Length: 188
Image 1 (cartoon, rainbow, N blue to C red):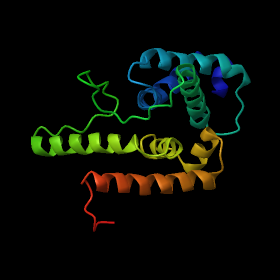
Image 2: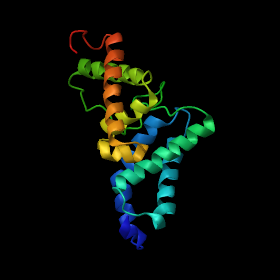
Image 3: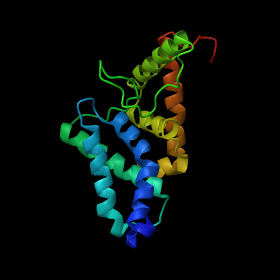
């Protein structure tokens, strides 16, 4: 980003190619089904370009980028007066998958593929039932692979609060998955 600030357009191309999948996946999981993910994706990177002159190295670039994406999702949800969706990558009511994170090719074992799809659907359903703050931390950690420190900066809370939310998210998900019969009651 510092190179881009100095006028190196190729540096932005490198950043874009490095983070486009992750940001699109983040937007896909955090916007409502009827919201245009492509438009949101373009807007996030437009905001990156627009904010480039004021970028300073206070955290990692990824943290800064996710903060922009998160704030954009919050702006959109405020306009709609709805909470962020935090969905996992699954097919929406007959719509084609966007291919961001697909299940590995399991054509040799269709039963396994069906089981993973069913488990993913149940996990998605369970995520809709837990606290939104906990869900956000869970998805940033587990789906985006961010550190607790980065998540704390993105969300604007302490690292201990992030860890607490992660713990409670895991407990809540375990309870919801037990209710759905996914986990054996004696497993936990």
